[in-house]
Amino acid sequence: MSLQVVNLKKTYKNPLSRKPPFEAVRGVSFEIKPGEIYALIGPNGAGKSTIIKMIAGLIVPSSGDVMLDGKKLGSETAAYKKLSAVLEGTRNVYWRLTPLENLHYFANLRGISTTEIREKSVQLLKTLEIEGKKKNQSQHLSRGMLQKLALGAALITDPQIILLDEPTLGLDVGSSRKIKEMMLELTRKHGKSILLTTHQMDLVEEVADRAGIIREGKIVREGTIPELRNVFRNHIYRFSVRGKFKLPPEWQKKYGAALLSGQNDHTEWEMDCKKPEGLYTVLSALGKKKLEIISMHKPVEDLEEIFMRTLSEEATR
Ligand SMILES: Nc1ncnc2c1ncn2[C@@H]1O[C@H](COP(=O)(O)OP(=O)(O)OP(=O)(O)O)[C@@H](O)[C@H]1O
Ligand SMILES: [Mg+2]
Image (cartoon, rainbow, N blue to C red; front, side, top):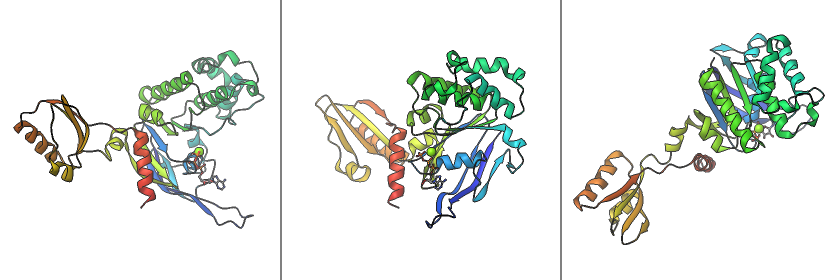
């Protein structure tokens, strides 16, 4: 099932306060196809949780649409059964119920009987590594265990669309990895769609197909992870040649060539070749001088750098 968000807006107004209304989300659109993981990344207060809550039907958008397979999600509850959300924090489960009872309760809410999910719920607690606590009151679970239980409660109903607001926040390394594996299995194997928000760029790099960078309620950049990596460094190359080589001044001027290291045995530099033609110019110059190329590659920038750069670029606009 695909999820489309079309020009979604949210203005928070408090009728009891004199404060002016606050535009938290200002026209956000994106689409998530079946089997895809889409990550929303952005600084605190950018509007990520607000978007998740609007899609989940927990707060009413000021305008815009949320659609499942092209059909508007309206007030009818049937369509919402296809969708599950894990919200920020750990208040998503009932503290007086045991983990197992919680899973049964959330399934029952969606009209699924306990017998239907008896095996599945035990299995899910096992996968989440909290089956040891299945008979304890949930209030005695640790914060990370509660977070995992909330994920279990969202998954027990077998939703097509899964909304995860910071799912690995505060989890230990092993638990984070487990959740990553689950996300990949749900999408790649079972064709579910996942919308994810996080501040953990490594998570985005490891699991997301596409990401949207959001700032002050707007998506300012969007693409697949390789596309985002290439935004700023499409034609930047790093060269290393045998021996001492003096960078031609015109390369410095035209391509911003910068020496990285220049020992006697090799010379290494980086430059922005601008277009593929620039690369050929450089290569033929090196060829004419019969220089031995030790290495030539496009260094990849990590997502965190791209994220920071996008935000600072937008801020100066
Ligand atoms: N109920 C509310 N009433 C008024 N303003 C709100 C309300 N909920 C959120 N906001 C404001 O809307 C903006 C977006 O909040 P939101 O929680 O969506 O951000 P976020 O991107 O999830 O941030 P974080 O990374 O910190 O979780 C913030 O400025 C926040 O103060
Ligand atoms: Mg949030």
